[in-house]
Length: 477
Ligand code: ARG
Image 1 (cartoon, rainbow, N blue to C red):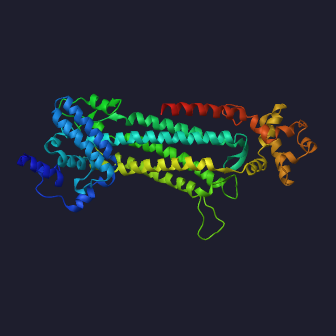
Image 2 (tube, rainbow, N blue to C red):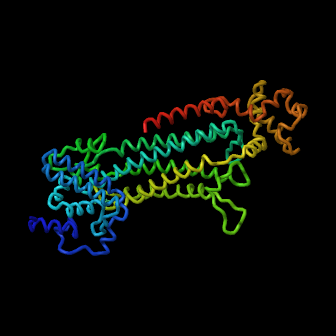
Image 3 (cartoon, protein in one colour):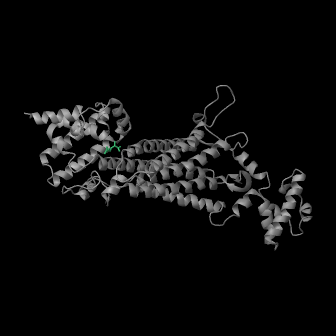
């Protein structure tokens, strides 16, 4: 038989708020909808349940609650998880957030025993736990997608290892490089992004339960045990810090922002390269859209949107920094505002990585256009100067001399390779027949064997090394 007391508690938890004991009046409806976070924090539900199960097991192990109550709670929570998964539970705005919704539902499901679950815990440590668990899973999924993207870059680089393109500085043609070398530059950026996410993960992966509201708890809890159950390698050291700090989110958002800078630069290049002006690549029809008025148009919307979404991700980082900068310790309700920027960033980064993983392998290259562009615009002028240096001329003198040759060629609407040896000798007696080999695309690329240079032998080594690293990563995942 359920006692009156039990009935009151059950009723209270279903239709009223767990905290309303000291309130004489009901919350205004406008306040309920203004303060509720259930609209977005519902995505934490499975972590909230896992966290509560671990907390409950710990309470039972420490004899803070009975084994019998604990097993009812664990079973009830499991049931609620399955219901939410199937969409069988309506979540209630008047119960503010996912934590109170689940707890109230538990009271409805199992009655009195449910009242024990929140012992030695506060929503302040509970919400940080949930977000940390959510974020470590999402970081793992971002890491896997980043590995996928890097693999595709390496495969593309290997497939097109010999293709030469103009390298640019100031968006002016500068020196020829291998297209594969250019792709491997992105590989390096994304490799560092991985390291940043991994580093952030170490500080995300800290278990805060036991901090309670802010000061810790009087119950003889075993936080290490809860951490073990939830596979956290560490427990938070300071209860005030544990409920007050969100730098683990900022760090993630910063790593995500930097990653989006890289994605956005790649997007910008794809947009430029697919224009008629460049004509280096063609974006597959399935990843482009047309214009409603201009029949000839094929627009690079996917890269444009990736470039555009970078702005959102930076905005989310700014939102978090601004949110936190003036808050006194410890928890403040402002901090509920950490979730939407975080969730939006996770969704955006994952979507961008995913769409590029699909688009990049289908990119069509126009090798001829790239090599033609690399052959026009005096990209071999540096090599001509270097040639004179090998014959004993000081670099600055060689630079000036070749500057004159370039001006001469421009006046005649010619490239350096179109000039005759006698014309060249007019600028320096040191030019010989072998200058014409030095100025070919192949020679210019393959003689750049300095560390990290674009010579094919270097690039092939970099590709091999990257492939090994990726295989190792996949084995670890
Ligand atoms: N929904 C709240 C949040 O996301 C949970 C913590 C509420 N704590 C409190 N003391 N009101 O931050």
